[in-house]
Amino acid sequence: GLTCDNLLAAEVVTSDGSVLHASESTHEDLFWALRGGGGNFGVVTSFEFRLHPIGPTVLGGMMLYPVEQAPEVLRFYRQLSAEASDDLTAFAVLMTLPGGPRAVAIAVAWFGEPTAGEAVLAPLRAFGAPIADMVGPLPYLQLQQLFDAAAPHGLSRYWKSGYFPQLSDGLLDVLVDGAAGLSPLSAVLFFQMHGAATRVAPGATAFAARRDQWDIDILTQWTDPADSDAHVAWTRTFWNALVPFSEGVYVNHLDGDEAVARVRSAYGTNYDRLAAIKARYDPDNLFRHNNNIPPA
Image (cartoon, rainbow, N blue to C red; front, side, top):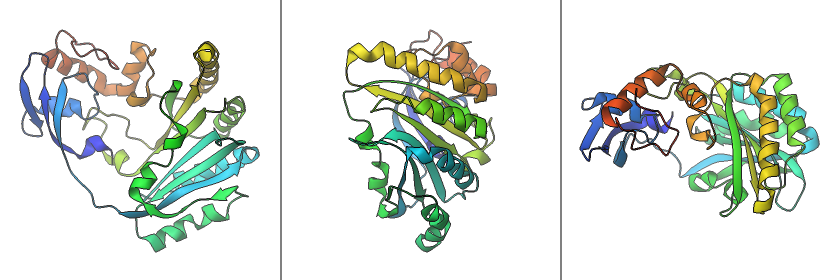
């Protein structure tokens, strides 16, 4: 499940300097808000988490395909991710390979028994005509670093993001057409929300987005500050074509120029409760340089 679903307790310094222990039994309202409410309520100085055994070796990696196959690859990805068990996570990426052509990737991670994982991933290995099959056993730490090279330090970045309850043919066609204009360092990323994260009630924590869906990001990156206006304008135009398909947004993927209404959409029915808790623990909105929830 989500990291916030595995938080057991936190030590928090609030706006008046108080040091509070928040858990299911102490400052329960603050604990509820911390699990998905961002940095609106104080400075967390320590976390206590529920841990899960994993690795050290898992089955995962990427399948790379030429961008000309993107319509078919993304439809296959739709089926693969929709049928995935809790042990399988699948991402998709439209991108430009370092020093090379544009491509589409399906990245997977299997956390169950390895032999069973090979059977589950057999249809992926058999699909299409990949440029490269890079799926295999690898250290869990290496899996976490899979896309590090695509986001080096020092680039300018701008992005737009939203939740999409379905990967309809119409949406995929808009994405493929829009991605034809990707600059060399930019990408379109598909993150799947499924499994344990969707079996928690929307009101159980501040994080309300608990249905099966996809988080799609247009991540634009460039090196020359003189190109900023062009990249921002391109990203916004691309995003505007996706808006009719989108419902809500992942709060950590909001960009800096989002309106208050979009922050509200990230929390859905939990927003008013969060605003009331904000008024209790930070009535003057000291912690406001964030995806802000003003005190009610």
